[in-house]
Image (cartoon, rainbow, N blue to C red; front, side):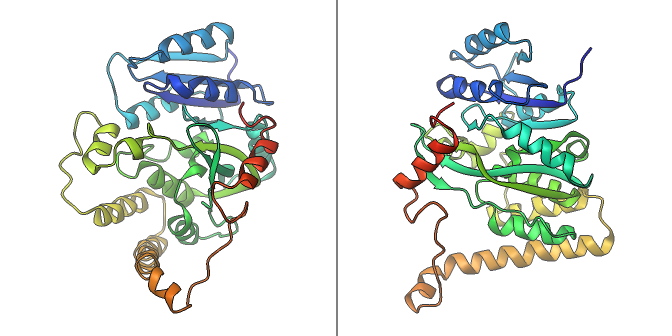
Length: 323
């Protein structure tokens, strides 16, 4: 049996509205040696019909349906557990990516040291209609050889966590605890940067959709978001504040990583120092602006997030703006 070079895992629950966009993005890739694993978390809309339609047309598509709802964490991890490729990529059911993404990410891996664990591209944020609203400025220090330095850059600059939707070396991903249930994408990214280098392709090849159905928008209360990750309610009794739980999860990631004692101490200190600095910048921003001590950073695609310039550049990169 042929084992594909890349596995793409697409977990979905009631995602019929945007699912075709995501499936077309995957199946339009210029690099064709991949498998697409879909795990339907007991959807009640037209998700099942759409997935079966695509599976019937393309033998690379493998469709699985859970008998009961596992929750986001369990479903995301299931598509990885079913994968066979040397490299793995998660695909969100409502996002889109450029046809050349897999090919370009794989090329970077082939030209980079074996210590490289993740390759990702720049990304724009789109709304429900596919219009660009923001440019993700998530970044990871690519030149840093020390884990604490890579971790510090991630904590300081990562907001959307879009790098997690890049291409990951499967063997390294298996060394992590996979998707958890609290700040899951950020914590898994932390585990990856502690394992090795993460390289960014300086092109916009990913479009992350933010709409009313997104988990963080539809589930604004903490308990609701925890239940989305884990419908069994195992985390619903977390009593720590968000800030303390956030630090604790990063400490757990550091404990899990294969680090020396000295490097582990540096990483603990990095979490405390960088998070404190971010808190200071957040709560003193207005005052610093008032007295002229802050300087706003220009956005790469124009001053206004939803500018026409942003949208035109994204459409040019994605040809017709929607795959």
